Length: 236
Image (cartoon, rainbow, N blue to C red; front, side, top):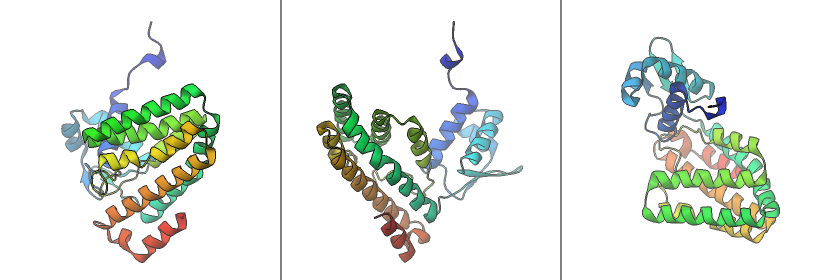
């Protein structure tokens, strides 16, 4: 007999995930307004789950709901962008150190195997699959560190709405370069070197922030101002 936990996602939950993904990847553009009818036709759903999904997306700060007109995708401000990466630095550095220090031999082997799959996918040139591997790698490392709440917080942090999408691939680096940017983290974790894992994670996060800032500045004036550079230096 199926339990509550065995149920699959509801239509509304599916709509939330499909719309969220389309927003963060830039398929639904920041600043644009979309009606429930338009979104329903685009995603093959009725208006009811779409409307329920837009309320959840509004709660997450991804859209604003305009009565009888639809939703408008809200672009992430420069301040929110920098704060998001500050959160990553505050959480992922100590947790990377913890993962490296506390991982069992089996967990170290799994992290190495997961990274090998990441590299294999990256070498195929599949952008979408590479970005999923990137997300899953970070999630897996945090799970080894034993902090489930951090996984939830950092998953929400990835809900940035940028005109160029949240990935630096393929605009600023190749799929292979994306994977290789994680190699030092993996090497440190496998070696059980907590300090090296924290330093490698810091370098990776700052590199990603810089690439995204440069990428976004091509289409948004506020991301290309001197203030933007100052904001990024705040992270360093």
